[in-house]
Image (cartoon, rainbow, N blue to C red; front, side, top):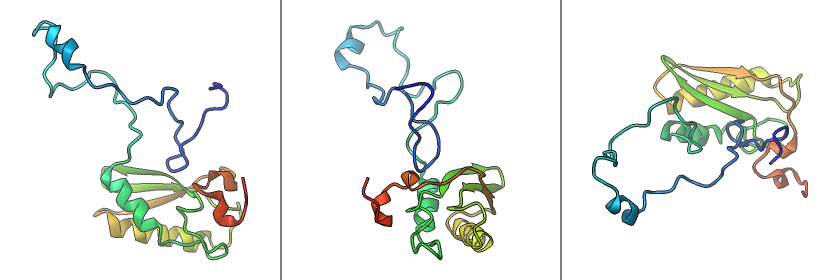
Length: 152
């Protein structure tokens, strides 16, 4: 993969790791031949910075599920189907949803932000904040661009 053009997860907006292979489970034969002092207990945590997980949390799945009901008034598709929801962060005391608009001067932006906020607050028991990202949207950010009638 080129370093200058990394793949991006369409749901989170985060770069996809270079190594898509999942971490391997320890081999039973290898661990049986290793001395007991060399093996770590199963409950030990990895030291160092936390690793980014490609799996969304149950809370994020709940938020994204409820956001499927928030529709773009002009296109008639949900903000999830359009790929507008880029990030969902659970912070202390609030949920931050970072989203894009299909056009920078979308006349429905205030309405869509309010609906995203209301839907998010219905899924998690804390206040939500919606932030609009300045990035340009395109149909290739959609999980299924065919919903717009494009054939890629």
